[in-house]
Length: 305
Image 1 (cartoon, rainbow, N blue to C red):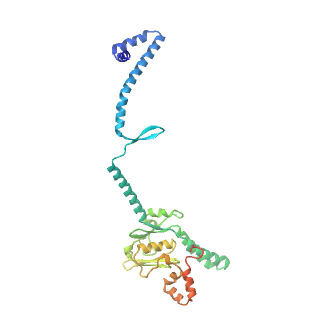
Image 2: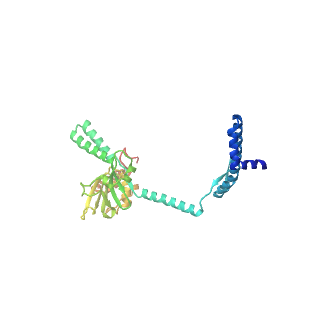
Image 3: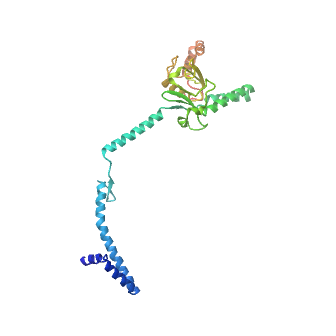
């Protein structure tokens, strides 16, 4: 081995290298090829020796940044990357949990009431009966136009409740209700028909609200003093999920002047009890009829119960 190492180092001497080059130039072609191969082999051995000296150093550096734990795969031990310190892992987990909590809180802070087509559909059905069947074409036109308008509004008007405000936004007809959460109140324009200004009111400004009728939602009303100091009333047909609207209003808006029953008690009897006219009608009913009112819940053929 010693002579081989000496010859390998001798090639790096300038004079020796010059002599070898001279011999290559003056030697016949076969000799030049053989000499070239010898030089290439010697250079390869030098390169291998240098690489062998460098590899242990690199391996030591890699070992310093790799965990001592290893995983076996098919009989071969594979080192795992080193984990960050516990203090950093805890901070990272806390940060991730905090971010998830913030997103969840932000998403849960706004309740979007989905659209409902029952009132519009009922009016359109009545129109089809009044016109083709009864030949009452004027009534057919009135009911048809109103039903079509309410059905169209139900496809785009969305009520939103935050922790402090109620506002109204418009979505594209047919779009998912979730898109309403990211829209601006300006999408619904100016409320010119009911006092003017933006369609957004704080709960603190609400003086009173009513819901007609608990059990058979048709119309919602509330009065606020944000638009006008003396109070501005607002009326909206129930073109949204009436049950969810009622639940959210009970939860977030100030208490109504009139006591409101919980949703679990909704029936036709609670609908009659919500107005003085309904209570007057009940006085003329028999006990059996009153019992039937309590057993009637939801719109016939439209609600599951």
